Amino acid sequence: MEPVAHFGIVGLGLVGRALAARIGAVGMTASGYDVAPRALDAARSQGIDTVGDLRALVAGSDALLVAVFDGAQLREVVEQALAHPVRPQLILHVVTAEPEISEKLAYRCEAAQVAFVEMPLSGSSRDIAAGTALALVGATDEVWARAQPLIEQLAPEHVHVGGPGAGARAKLATNLVLGLNRVALAEGLLFAETLGIEGTRFLDLLRRSPAYSRAVDTVGPRMVAGEFTTVSRLSQHHKDLRLMLAEAVRAGIDLPLVRAHAAVLAEGEAQGKGELDNAAVIAVLRERKPS
Image (cartoon, rainbow, N blue to C red; front, top):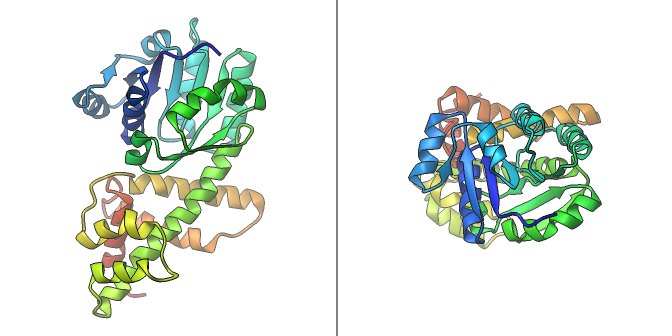
């Protein structure tokens, strides 16, 4: 694989903008495109170069980095890129999507002589920009060998978990545990407060107990303060939970805690909290009536 000097980023939400920051931090350049004017404006306000359409982005990029919302959008972007007369040498995506989508797109890219890597990231947008998010890489052994030096720059913390589709499966399983840690903390905080234990004091207690998880430090203080500035959106995690449940049906297993969590986040979206940070799950629980 030739050295990548310039990335085209498709999707300039929190993750896309964080990846642009990371690309700049390691000495490469990037331009971005998004269908949403608000996302383009946010990117420009952070000094990210933007282009007017996807075709122009593909034509001017050595590699395409896709950070859109879901699998349907991912499929559309990749198909458009492959239809372009000047294709990128590498398509790398960070979308949490159905594993079979990555499998099929990898096959399409191989036929077009374009390297394909799925690299969902476990961590917040802040972690991604800092290079501390864990990348769960799905790629053939051949593509992994060629792309590894680049991935080491973008995500020093990474694991090659298998071929295309394996990264998505690992991300869904990881996000299951991550999300349940978060909602369990929110419920525990709410319960402690109703028992008369002040929130910050309860977090300090958890840090010294077997009940500790990293959620205590990453989202606990924001839950206590009611500060839900978006680092990772509640609606995004709700989408991931729906993917987990669909995969569980295909596998013939039940995920009762995921079903309960999904119901809570569905309430959050109905309350208009979908664009808030995942820490806002505690606010959703506060509005719940006893059953």
